[in-house]
Length: 225
Image (cartoon, rainbow, N blue to C red; front, side):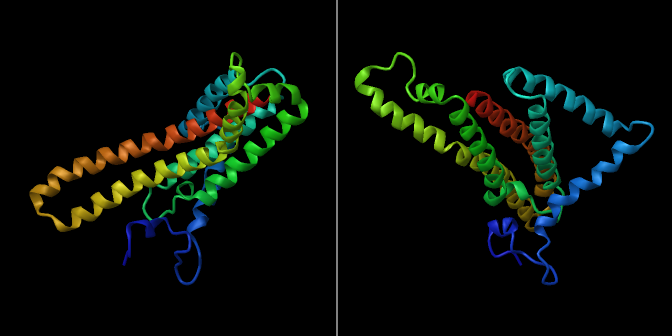
């Protein structure tokens, strides 16, 4: 029995003494064989179209100093987060992207590598960026503190944004589905379309959050150069 609402996001939940929750992150491997059919399937065609559109947009955000492989890494990041978000909507699959240990382990290395690259390659530019142009002299010291704090909390805001949005939607779906088991038939007819609409909204949120995470990461990498 579920002890509280957040127990569905507990990664220590086990079946037959086996921790299988994080195994859902490997389900993305099941989509790989679609790329090896002689005749492209609708799924592979849709995936190719999405990759080309995303690559074109990321190329605009990234500067020319970045290698072409940078956009491929970010596209792989988008597909990985998107797959985990969408698979989490299926029953009995743990949503890995709703856990901070998952999102922070992705955001922190990307942020740290961008920061280190920027400070090592463009030290003067990075120092100048701490004081925006036109800042009055008495406020320069405070602006350095504010900009430094803003840079430090970037991986936290990235990870919390993704996890919080996934948790919030899943909690609403859990509350509504729990209520459906203790109501009469007429109320059931009213709440069922609401549950379907919420599921559709969560599907859109899963795509949007993966896109937002990738775009913000791209902007941070571009800003470092």
